[in-house]
Length: 255
Image (tube, one colour):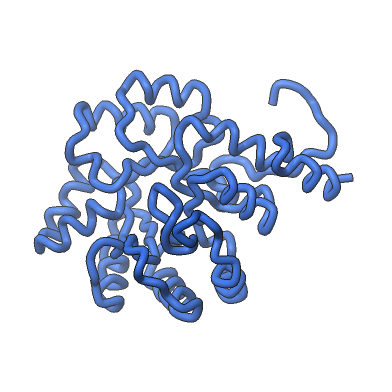
């Protein structure tokens, strides 16, 4: 930090297991990545190249190298995994991961239906090759899972080899753990946290109000995902109680 302030919440340090900020790159240019890393790289733990954007991104290898040189892991969005699986090209997907020297992969079933035992088998196979992050929840706003099902799915995927499980919200933050208005399904989140350790979950929270809600519930070191590149610095100030949204919350806790 640039100067000293008393009564600031403790943040975990990189490389960290909780307090993660996962950033969504939806198509940044090489120059934009360089600018982003200069400003926000210190506060970014992992970057996802959203959905299947890696398929059409120019200079993909050069972009990946920029992130790696900055010490920030990067992975392809889960929709790319689904695009290969639905075409019976899982082995091709594994070869693509090797071709681009990927160390992480996302396994999801938000756009297609995969029997859960098959999804867990994909996780098991990929976990011998890369670090797996799996995503629970559908991108279809009409599909609402009961809390016990979220818990069972998350637990099974962790047992199958997932490093972290992502609670689905899409890039807009209006499905899955949220209502279509963006409001958190509080009862659902509370139920999940009774059974699944919070440090194993990455909550997709693209909207500021959602970020504030989870930080106030769990603390500065909650794992948050689908953060826009321009929102990383603002998010860090929310985590530290240095923005109006959490200013009094953390000041009262740290006195």
